[in-house]
Image 1 (tube, protein in one colour):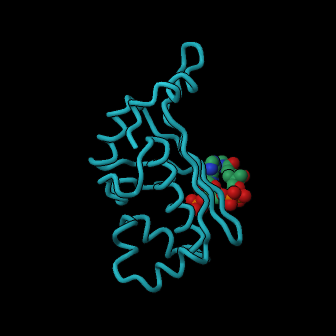
Image 2 (spheres, protein in one colour):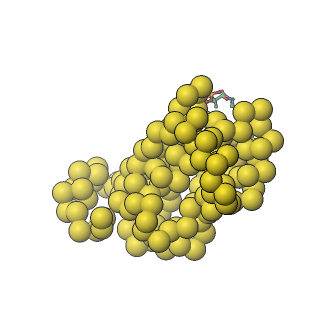
Image 3 (tube, protein in one colour):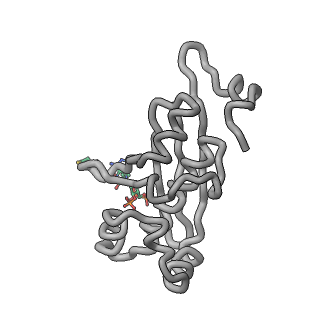
Length: 141
Ligand SMILES: CC(C)(COP(=O)(O)OP(=O)(O)OC[C@H]1O[C@@H](n2cnc3c(N)ncnc32)[C@H](O)[C@@H]1OP(=O)(O)O)[C@@H](O)C(=O)NCCC(=O)NCCS
């Protein structure tokens, strides 16, 4: 689905001088993602960057952190009005952590180009996880 063709969507997110270009959210079943990571050969490396793999594996409950990062990647695509088969490498949508633990997106070439195409200035991320589910929200100003 193209984003720029949607005039109604553009109007919906225009507030005075400021303008939100997109918002996306995703909810991930922690156990389901953990099963994919266990069973699908090469799945983890296709989806996650090496720093993401290192961070998640260093945590007490890696599957929750993986699930939140998977949600973040999907939420980014939704915020841009794109899907998983849009040609953007999921490893180009990387979650990094600030010194206080706050998550931030670091975009590789295919994701940065998609953001630029919608005129996005940034992609702001928030994530949460609990026992069964992980959630991410991305806002593109
Ligand atoms: C941020 C905070 C509210 C998270 O609450 P929580 O219920 O434990 O966490 P949730 O399960 O809802 O979400 C976890 C996610 O929150 C995010 N998060 C962590 N710290 C954050 C922060 N400071 N700001 C925004 N998001 C944060 C991370 O993405 C984390 O996921 P990850 O560990 O997989 O990267 C809590 O950890 C807190 O109050 N920390 C103190 C942060 C602070 O004050 N830091 C300043 C001192 S340097």
